[in-house]
Amino acid sequence: MLVANRVSFVIFELITESESLNKQKRKCDLFCLKSDFCENLPNAAYDVTLTDDSWAEEVFNSIIGNTSKTWERLDSGSLVSHSFELESKVKTVYYGAPALITYRIPTKSKLQAELEQTGFVAVRLTYTSKSQGGAVPPLRRPPPDQIAADSSKMITIPYLTALTTYFSYGLLFAFGQLRDFFRKIIDWWSKSSLQDCFNRPISSPPDAWFDVVERISNDNNKTLKRTTRVNRCLNLGSYNYLGFAAADEYCTPRVIESLKKFSPSTCSARVDGGTTTLHAELEECVANFVGKEAAVVFGMGYVTNSAILPVLMGKGSLIISDSLNHNSIVNGARGSGATVRVFQHNTPSHLEKVLKDQIAEGQPRTHRPWKKILVVVEGIYSMEGELCQLPEIVSICKKYKAYIYLDEAHSIGAIGKTGRGVCELLGVDTADVDIMMGTFTKSFGSCGGYIAGSKELIQYLKYTCPAHLYATSISPPAAQQIISSLKVVLGEDGSSRGAQKLAKIRENSNFFRSELQKMGFEVLGDNDSPVMPVMLYNPAKIPAFSRECLKRNVAVVTVAFPATPLLLARARICISAAHTREDLVKALEVLSEVGDMIGIKYFPAEPKKQQLEEGRVKLE
Image (cartoon, rainbow, N blue to C red):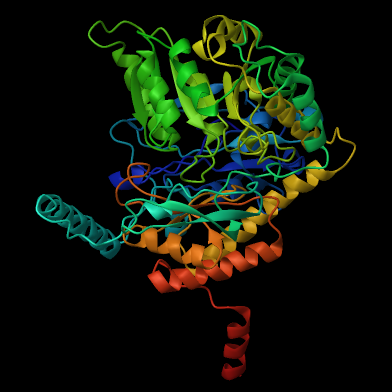
């Protein structure tokens, strides 16, 4: 019988020597052992001593031996719903941060019983030290590719780009001061402004292609006048992820019927005469779709955040918000009267640090415990195109008993196998998210927003939220559009168009992102996200990119300060399921040409297949 010497199978974390690397996101290596693992265990509890330099593979090889290589890597989303708590705690090791708790491996019989029930056992590994007292020696630094993969997604600006961008803004400031000074004497400034790059009117539905109205100016864009001429442009700027913004064979006839039956507006708030059968049906459909007990809908997505947060939180409460959350969340948090703290964008480790510090300190001055703590994040960040690190954030909020508020404005309907958003995509149970918010403007071709949660929460909001009590209810035709589009997504229209749209938006998004990166553009965001920010940086390149694309009949949206940090101007591209492969290829050709012209390809382009083949022939 083997004698237990030291602990063994526990959480394996990357701990680096460099302080700067410690600020980067830490990830656990998660592994799964299949049933073959049990055959190599003795019929007793089995512990293993890990050396100071042990890494996951080495540890597994020493335990399993060369006879079994059946373990495989799992992602964090899989572990959330299938993790297996091992038998008993045997040791706690401190690294000057949170405790890492080790677990004893259970007996062979217990492992086999678990395998019969779940099909596998999830095992977590960590580093443990043989040092007795004193500082624990650090682990070896991971390879560079490991560090790059695990680092938090912060934008690193090339030195030369940052320098020229600052210089450009300095010139703008200096010439602006000169212009304002001499304008009192004579209006000598003849340089055109940027107004023509924004507020461009359209005269058609925002489908894959739409009509952009031409404007003219006789005073260097100080004033712009619309003409009767239009340009047919490829639309890369509208939130039309599933293509419901244009006429639809299932939705449009039903919307027209609702317009005849209910009129364009209820002309009343929900608590007066503004609740129709469509509103009740819509709230039931939304609650079922997102997997919550109940839901309430509002006529405007922005107001959904800015009006709900002051109702939920108040003095003595704490809101912890992602640093890049939408302005509606920022204004709602400020208007609530609660204390607001910010954590580094999409960095769960920093969120945990903020939570621990704030729980330890308590309320300002009195240091009393917080009445409520609410963590606010987005499913897809609208200016970054990044997916929220939701499984890790949910785990942290459970640990510290904080509520979670998830804004799915850009993710609901657009990602996930059935369009149910980031929870479905990342394998998070919606029961672990306390408040789910979303809008109907992005994926469903309508307007408004919703809050979904428990029945008690929704009833409380209906009694107290000003947006429900005083604002005009959502338009009945708009409500019918949402109901109909939801039925298409769910396949309740009797067709498979919903599944096809979801597959198309995912395929289009990943193809377009991949091709832009191959061309050398700096593209932010994650795969599956239909939002693709292309970095411009320099202020002079903002109007140049917008105008040159419009000349080639491609309409794009450019974004700069104050919507983004000063140095991080970008073009935000939104992909739709309505785009064909020919549309995307044309867009890529135009963007590549314009990118070469104004110099925004900050990375070397990948050689094309034809060039590679020619190179091989020359070598041969």
